[in-house]
Image 1 (cartoon, rainbow, N blue to C red):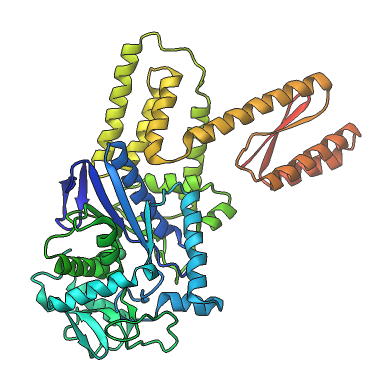
Image 2: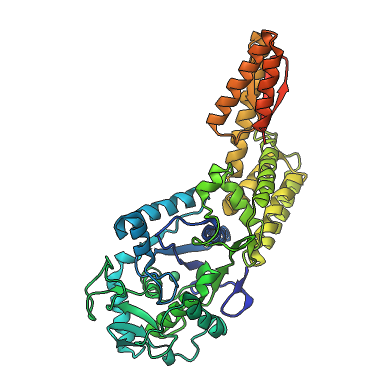
Length: 498
Ligand SMILES: [Zn+2]
């Protein structure tokens, strides 16, 4: 598999330190607020990557941290503590905030079919490991104490800007935040490993350390958690592109100084999700969450497909129009799969069928091996639908590919098949009993709306029966204003909602 590597700035053949095993680290969320769907794009693409690596036979050992202390609003050592900001906003303790938003993050992951990594480590559970790593860094001469804090000494490195020359960007960070330079730092690029001189008098969480009561810097947690959970050699490190600098740059500085050898050869970064007016963030513009998408009538799978439809190394522009067309595409895809017969007869020429299936698998793998081209991998699903093979083989292949893409395709199709069957049965029964059957053909409509639509349809039928046509028409118009289209049958009314 070829994957773009931010470190070498080329597409490299993906290999692992230990054959057959992939050690993968993911920077987890800072749990001070709901995740917006831009953050979740990164987790969706990392999830597909992990599942594809498993699909190719690798034993993936994946670890993710949960940042519940030390992350300042600027990503560098300036601004205020994000957790503290969240706690103040909601008049809760930092740990209450952490627990609430960790659960919320996992709930979002579940809705989006994002597999939770095997090892999830909250930063506050590993303070001893951070202290031990900082002690070694001081011992080795890579860190110094100044003004009460412990800093990493970036002048000790041959190449601090490992991802390219971010010097200009680095300077811009300082300007943007409009903060005073930290006088205790020997060099501008040095960063805090351990705070004892808290800028925040009300800092809630503090721990004893050899340098006094304090708390860790943000970057140290990923280095220490990764080394303790996955060992000295990492195969793959993932995150959003905004993590590359300074966070990942600092992680590499700490880990390699601590270990004394190269740490992770492959860096996978997902680009931003933008709105039409710019980068999506929690502080500006519409705050888009999974719950909001659901409120607006979008299945979270539609957002997942929206993300998979675009390459992870391109900025993706979010729009409601884009979501609408993806919703239509998802609905059509599910209907086509639902039309396949799971009880179809065996193939007449099993060898030819096997060959075609292999060719389809190769097409899917080729797309994924080509720097995780998920958009092309999705089209492999349509190739399966079009192929001249039996329905059972098609369903098996779709299930196989969807073990990576995780679009819930077989489940959604089975549900639709069941609904269609129930609707047919209801129509048949209505024909026999002459009682009106109301059949919903828009399975995504929520039960409350569906009940209201059915009530109105029955009211209209009663009005018609009583020859009260003005009322019947008025109800039809009301339904039409709700986006409901009716199709009258003999004893049935079928309806769809846009
Ligand atoms: Zn990290």
